Image (cartoon, rainbow, N blue to C red; front, side, top):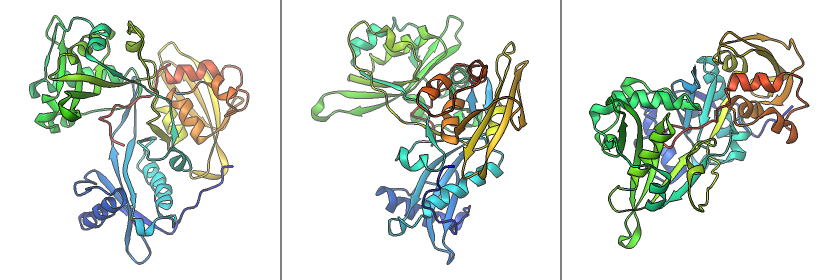
Amino acid sequence: MAVAPHYDDSIRVRPADAGDLEAMRRVGTRAFNCNALDWYTETPLVGETADGRVVSALALTLGPLYWGGAEIPASAVGGVATDPSEQGKGYAGGMMVATVHHMRELGLAVCPLWPFSFRYYRKFGWELTCMDRAVDLWPNMLRAIGETPDGVRSAAREDAPGMHAAHTRAARLTNGQSVRSEAWWAEQSDAFYANALVHEDGAGTIDGYALYEGQDRPYGQGKRYRVQELQAADLAVQRKLLAAVADLPDIVEAHVVLPADALLLDLAPERLIVQQPMRLMIRVLDVGRALEHLKPDADASGRIAFEVRDWIVSRDKPITVTATIEGGHVDVKPGCAVEPVRCGITTFARLYSGGLSIGRACALGLVDAAPSGAHSALEAITGGRAPFRSDKEPG
């Protein structure tokens, strides 16, 4: 069993009320040494000592995530802060433990997080799922990878429904992107749409978009554009959007982050340096619930059992479940009806997200020798998709 890290389980963690916000934002400002006056607008949790002092805070952004065609109940965690004068006492750790239980009580299954430290959050069951692909491209390279940008134009607020539909189609090709409602698109600012390009097909339907942020380089050297989202299910549309980025005002460089299995960079006609940033951590809050929400292909079948060690959820014994894949559904029962894959909760998060195969997990010593049929069954439930969240995702 994993040894629990230092944490204070006496800290009281509860949903914040309006009277807590000033104290929470003060904690965030002090902890991150930046202006946190507009933080904690989502569903904040407050951590207070026995004498009522607010010492820690975080925010939950509730909303499901796409796992291919499935929608997994989830919440992103952000703004995790402890007042510097109270750090080192285990308050932040106590808050993370309590938050796991709180999210489970809400019926959630998965929680993504953008970490300040992989080592720290790994102690509480979050794990790096896989590495993305990132590259800096100059305009000529953007045009070379791309195609003639016909059909691409600047976006407008009236494009929200079409961008929504394009996002949904593209997000379902990965594991972990947020399900966005019509209300989410309506809430975005005019600046959001002003900094976007959309592509229309021959029938006038928006089938992809690129969302960007321009940053002035020093000494009047033009602009560096960060492509915050490149959403299109079709590779040709992705290429057209990139080619259009090359024509943005004063551009000298663009930074693009793509899923690990993206094809775009394989089209580069000359040498380039691809980075593999380690960015996203995911925690599986409920093993059985996470599995039963998946939607494999209708013709997929198989059975896989897991024996998962999770010291926060089940300290005394491993969690055991059997998942049966049939008819486009995953039926989950407690216990192991077949020889299980044995692992910790962090390894399970990598397997579940599609960021790690059982074969590689065995080679790394993260699981015992996998039983017959486990490889194909895991492939069936993860869909062979890579985990990914764009720079616009909360966490």
